[in-house]
Length: 124
Image (cartoon, rainbow, N blue to C red; front, top):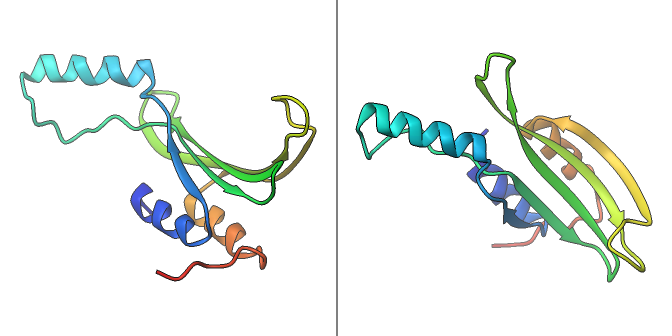
């Protein structure tokens, strides 16, 4: 399941999408390959860390963080996702945290999200 599909599915449940910076390691690898191959049109595109947020109230939100995974040999394995609810009351540290899943695949994540009956699917 690709990132674009996941983004569209989560949008239906009221999540909005945030993208992080490209990790320095990937940027260096990308530029090295580009230089060695002397090609501008590489198929490889550096991935970014992602976060989805669904605001539930003034202080509480559901969060999904997508983190890249690599094998021990450095082979890119795709994203794994952490899914949790956090409440922030008086400062930037969460005062309440409930974890629904860690290191989930996209398929596992969507299964969990669809299990929340209060997340109304928005009509397009």
